[in-house]
Amino acid sequence: QVQLVESGGGLVQAGGSLRLSCAASGSTFSNYVMGWFRQAPGKEREFLATISRVGYNREYADSVKARFTISRDNAKNTVYLQMNSLKPEDTAVYYCAAGSGPQGSRRLSQYNYWGQGTQVTVSS
Image (cartoon, rainbow, N blue to C red; front, side, top):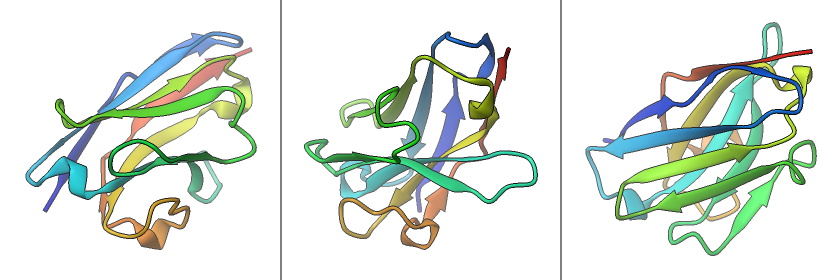
């Protein structure tokens, strides 16, 4: 079992930046591929970024590739999402997830554990 707790969300103006953190506990963090997803009101949860177990492989959704950066610190059992040049359409609840599957996982079903989410609101 892995417990995940996101933090770092909030209200930011368009063009601003936020860094989300996701702290893991309960199991060996480096055993898991980690991902970030988001869900806007009335929309399905969508993939944003994923990072491999030791951090060498990172993949992004096209919509955020040039603006968001995923990273992890296995010594701190934490995964991060640095978000720059934020837009109003980035407003959503952001979730981190841990999966036992292959690196590069983009589907929700490939992730076994989820955090409770953190709200990000970008004002215009």
